[in-house]
Amino acid sequence: MKVKIGIAETPRELVVSSDRTPDEVAQLVSGAMKSDDGLLDLTDDQGNRFVVPVARISYVEIGPSEERKVGFGLGG
Image 1 (cartoon, rainbow, N blue to C red):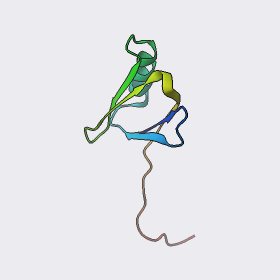
Image 2 (image 1 turned 120 degrees about the vertical axis):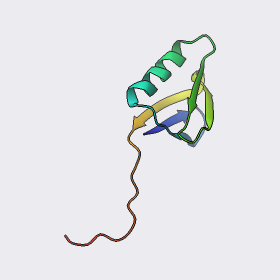
Image 3 (image 1 turned 90 degrees about the horizontal axis):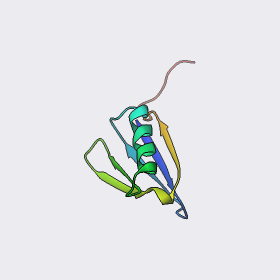
């Protein structure tokens, strides 16, 4: 799945590919918003770790990974 995180006052969003379910990611975000340290800690499907201060998060979009099709489509 793909997680997009908008960061306040930053033109680009952080995109993380994760093996977690949408519910697990939503629970992580919710827990981070309530935590004392105020940090969202995500690890992508390749083991890269992203730590984002929740005070800077504008939005979190949780959705399926985009499948990229290769080749040419035939037919109509």
